[in-house]
Length: 170
Image 1: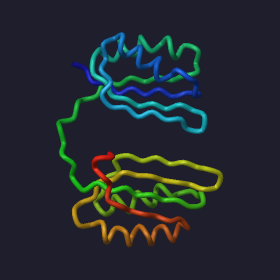
Image 2: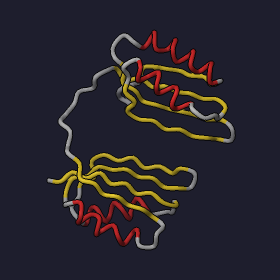
Image 3: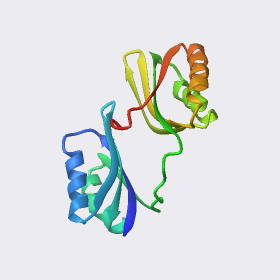
C-alpha cells in the first residue's frame, strides 16, 4: 500500500475539494489526513492518502491542473509508526497589530522550551493579526513558558495566551 502526500493550490473556486476527492476515490485512494483552507482568495489543500502509486495519482490530477489554475504535487512518503504524544496539549493565541516576525519569535519561544507546534493558523483582518497554534509541551514547563511568551509579546506589541487544550476538541 502506497502512502502519498498531495498538495493542491490555486485561485479558489467552488468544487475544488469535490473534484480532488472524486479523482482520488475513483483511483481507490483512501484519504486519511487532510487540511484545506482559503487564504486571501487562494485555495490550499494538503492531504495524506493511501492507495495507488504516485505516478497514477499525478496522471489522474492532470485534468484538474490542465488550465493552469491549480497546481498539484504528489509525493510518496514513508508511513510513520504510531507515536504517542510527547507532551501535554496546549493552545497558544496571539493577537495584535500586524508586523513582521510575530510567528518566528513566538514559535521560537515554544521550541526553546521543548515544545512542538502541531497545528498553526494565522489570519490578517485589517491591521489585526491573529495566530492560533496547537502545541505539545513537556510536562511542567507551561508556567515558566507563559512568562517567556509574555516578555516576547511585549517586545512585539502583541498579546498572548497559553491554555491547556481540551483533548476532546482536538
